[in-house]
Length: 188
Image 1 (cartoon, rainbow, N blue to C red):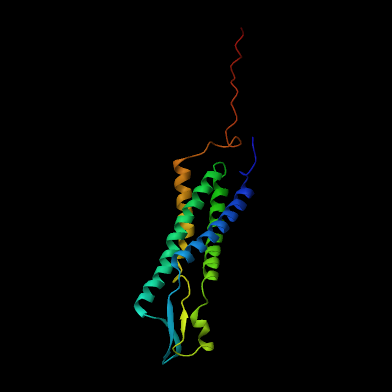
Image 2 (cartoon, rainbow, N blue to C red):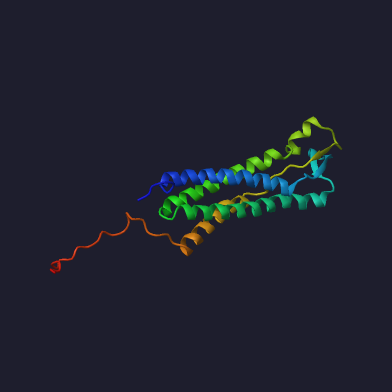
Protein backbone atom coordinates (compact mmCIF):
# COMPACT_ATOMS: atom_id res chain seq x y z
CA UNK A 1 0.00 0.00 0.00
CA UNK A 2 1.32 3.44 -0.94
CA UNK A 3 1.26 6.24 1.63
CA UNK A 4 2.39 9.39 -0.21
CA UNK A 5 0.38 12.58 -0.33
CA UNK A 6 -2.80 10.73 0.60
CA UNK A 7 -2.33 10.80 4.40
CA UNK A 8 -4.85 12.86 6.39
CA UNK A 9 -2.30 15.34 7.78
CA UNK A 10 -0.70 15.81 4.37
CA UNK A 11 -4.16 16.40 2.86
CA UNK A 12 -4.95 19.16 5.32
CA UNK A 13 -1.54 20.74 4.70
CA UNK A 14 -2.06 20.52 0.93
CA UNK A 15 -5.51 22.10 1.32
CA UNK A 16 -4.01 24.95 3.36
CA UNK A 17 -1.28 25.61 0.80
CA UNK A 18 -3.73 25.40 -2.10
CA UNK A 19 -6.10 27.81 -0.34
CA UNK A 20 -3.35 30.38 0.21
CA UNK A 21 -2.06 30.10 -3.37
CA UNK A 22 -5.52 30.26 -4.94
CA UNK A 23 -6.53 33.07 -2.59
CA UNK A 24 -3.46 35.13 -3.51
CA UNK A 25 -4.20 34.55 -7.18
CA UNK A 26 -7.81 35.52 -6.52
CA UNK A 27 -6.77 38.76 -4.81
CA UNK A 28 -4.68 39.73 -7.80
CA UNK A 29 -7.51 38.81 -10.22
CA UNK A 30 -10.00 40.73 -8.10
CA UNK A 31 -7.83 43.86 -8.12
CA UNK A 32 -7.04 43.54 -11.83
CA UNK A 33 -10.67 43.06 -12.84
CA UNK A 34 -11.89 45.90 -10.60
CA UNK A 35 -9.12 48.46 -11.32
CA UNK A 36 -8.42 51.23 -11.95
CA UNK A 37 -9.98 52.63 -8.78
CA UNK A 38 -12.74 55.19 -9.13
CA UNK A 39 -11.95 58.72 -8.07
CA UNK A 40 -13.90 60.74 -5.57
CA UNK A 41 -13.90 64.06 -3.84
CA UNK A 42 -13.91 65.19 -0.22
CA UNK A 43 -17.04 67.16 0.65
CA UNK A 44 -17.98 69.24 3.66
CA UNK A 45 -21.13 67.74 5.22
CA UNK A 46 -23.14 68.41 8.39
CA UNK A 47 -21.29 65.51 10.02
CA UNK A 48 -17.87 66.80 8.92
CA UNK A 49 -15.65 65.88 5.99
CA UNK A 50 -16.75 62.89 3.91
CA UNK A 51 -15.42 61.23 0.75
CA UNK A 52 -17.91 60.44 -2.01
CA UNK A 53 -17.28 58.99 -5.47
CA UNK A 54 -17.37 61.60 -8.21
CA UNK A 55 -19.72 61.28 -10.09
CA UNK A 56 -21.79 59.78 -7.30
CA UNK A 57 -24.01 57.26 -9.13
CA UNK A 58 -21.31 55.43 -11.14
CA UNK A 59 -19.28 55.18 -7.92
CA UNK A 60 -22.07 53.23 -6.23
CA UNK A 61 -22.20 50.90 -9.21
CA UNK A 62 -18.44 50.52 -9.01
CA UNK A 63 -18.64 49.77 -5.29
CA UNK A 64 -21.15 47.00 -5.94
CA UNK A 65 -18.90 45.83 -8.76
CA UNK A 66 -16.03 45.23 -6.33
CA UNK A 67 -18.23 43.03 -4.14
CA UNK A 68 -19.73 41.15 -7.08
CA UNK A 69 -16.30 40.69 -8.65
CA UNK A 70 -15.01 39.28 -5.36
CA UNK A 71 -17.86 36.78 -5.22
CA UNK A 72 -17.44 35.62 -8.82
CA UNK A 73 -13.65 35.20 -8.62
CA UNK A 74 -13.86 33.56 -5.19
CA UNK A 75 -16.55 31.09 -6.25
CA UNK A 76 -14.63 30.07 -9.37
CA UNK A 77 -11.38 29.48 -7.48
CA UNK A 78 -13.26 27.70 -4.69
CA UNK A 79 -14.62 25.25 -7.26
CA UNK A 80 -11.04 24.52 -8.33
CA UNK A 81 -10.06 24.01 -4.67
CA UNK A 82 -12.96 21.63 -4.06
CA UNK A 83 -12.27 19.56 -7.17
CA UNK A 84 -8.57 19.29 -6.32
CA UNK A 85 -9.44 18.31 -2.76
CA UNK A 86 -11.80 15.58 -3.96
CA UNK A 87 -9.18 14.23 -6.34
CA UNK A 88 -6.51 14.10 -3.61
CA UNK A 89 -8.84 12.77 -0.90
CA UNK A 90 -10.26 9.73 -2.64
CA UNK A 91 -9.22 7.48 0.24
CA UNK A 92 -9.71 9.92 3.14
CA UNK A 93 -13.03 11.69 2.67
CA UNK A 94 -13.26 13.23 6.15
CA UNK A 95 -9.71 14.56 6.01
CA UNK A 96 -10.55 15.88 2.54
CA UNK A 97 -13.52 17.83 3.91
CA UNK A 98 -11.30 19.34 6.59
CA UNK A 99 -8.60 20.15 4.02
CA UNK A 100 -11.10 21.88 1.73
CA UNK A 101 -12.61 23.90 4.58
CA UNK A 102 -9.19 24.97 5.89
CA UNK A 103 -8.14 25.88 2.35
CA UNK A 104 -11.34 27.85 1.81
CA UNK A 105 -10.85 29.80 5.03
CA UNK A 106 -7.28 30.64 4.10
CA UNK A 107 -8.43 31.49 0.57
CA UNK A 108 -10.84 34.10 1.99
CA UNK A 109 -8.06 35.67 4.03
CA UNK A 110 -5.43 35.59 1.28
CA UNK A 111 -7.77 36.96 -1.40
CA UNK A 112 -8.92 39.81 0.83
CA UNK A 113 -5.41 40.70 1.99
CA UNK A 114 -3.82 40.61 -1.47
CA UNK A 115 -6.67 42.44 -3.20
CA UNK A 116 -6.90 45.18 -0.61
CA UNK A 117 -3.12 45.58 -0.31
CA UNK A 118 -2.96 46.34 -4.05
CA UNK A 119 -5.70 48.96 -3.64
CA UNK A 120 -5.17 52.56 -2.55
CA UNK A 121 -5.94 53.17 1.14
CA UNK A 122 -9.49 53.84 2.23
CA UNK A 123 -10.12 57.51 1.43
CA UNK A 124 -12.18 57.92 4.61
CA UNK A 125 -9.03 57.19 6.63
CA UNK A 126 -7.25 60.08 4.88
CA UNK A 127 -9.83 62.80 5.56
CA UNK A 128 -7.85 64.47 8.36
CA UNK A 129 -4.80 65.01 6.15
CA UNK A 130 -6.70 66.42 3.14
CA UNK A 131 -8.79 69.47 2.43
CA UNK A 132 -12.38 69.74 1.22
CA UNK A 133 -12.62 69.34 -2.59
CA UNK A 134 -9.41 67.24 -2.80
CA UNK A 135 -9.67 64.29 -5.18
CA UNK A 136 -8.73 60.84 -3.88
CA UNK A 137 -8.94 57.35 -5.42
CA UNK A 138 -11.44 54.83 -4.11
CA UNK A 139 -10.66 51.69 -2.13
CA UNK A 140 -11.27 48.05 -3.06
CA UNK A 141 -13.43 46.35 -0.43
CA UNK A 142 -16.29 43.92 0.06
CA UNK A 143 -19.62 45.25 1.27
CA UNK A 144 -21.24 42.90 3.80
CA UNK A 145 -20.13 39.46 4.94
CA UNK A 146 -22.07 37.17 2.58
CA UNK A 147 -19.64 37.37 -0.38
CA UNK A 148 -17.03 35.73 1.84
CA UNK A 149 -19.22 32.61 1.81
CA UNK A 150 -18.35 32.07 -1.86
CA UNK A 151 -15.15 30.28 -0.80
CA UNK A 152 -16.56 27.63 1.57
CA UNK A 153 -19.81 27.14 -0.37
CA UNK A 154 -18.08 26.79 -3.75
CA UNK A 155 -15.34 24.52 -2.40
CA UNK A 156 -17.72 22.21 -0.56
CA UNK A 157 -20.12 22.08 -3.49
CA UNK A 158 -17.37 21.00 -5.89
CA UNK A 159 -15.91 18.57 -3.33
CA UNK A 160 -19.19 16.85 -2.56
CA UNK A 161 -20.32 16.64 -6.20
CA UNK A 162 -16.96 15.19 -7.24
CA UNK A 163 -16.91 12.67 -4.36
CA UNK A 164 -20.43 11.46 -5.18
CA UNK A 165 -19.97 11.45 -8.95
CA UNK A 166 -16.54 9.77 -8.95
CA UNK A 167 -16.22 7.60 -5.85
CA UNK A 168 -12.70 6.30 -5.30
CA UNK A 169 -11.71 2.75 -4.66
CA UNK A 170 -12.19 1.89 -1.00
CA UNK A 171 -9.00 1.83 0.99
CA UNK A 172 -7.37 -1.56 1.53
CA UNK A 173 -7.65 -1.02 5.28
CA UNK A 174 -11.39 -0.50 5.17
CA UNK A 175 -12.11 -3.66 3.16
CA UNK A 176 -13.56 -6.48 5.29
CA UNK A 177 -11.18 -9.38 5.87
CA UNK A 178 -11.65 -12.41 3.65
CA UNK A 179 -13.82 -15.12 5.25
CA UNK A 180 -12.43 -18.64 5.45
CA UNK A 181 -14.77 -21.37 4.45
CA UNK A 182 -15.51 -24.12 6.96
CA UNK A 183 -15.65 -26.66 4.11
CA UNK A 184 -12.59 -28.83 3.64
CA UNK A 185 -10.28 -27.95 0.76
CA UNK A 186 -10.79 -30.05 -2.34
CA UNK A 187 -8.45 -33.00 -2.64
CA UNK A 188 -7.20 -33.70 -6.03
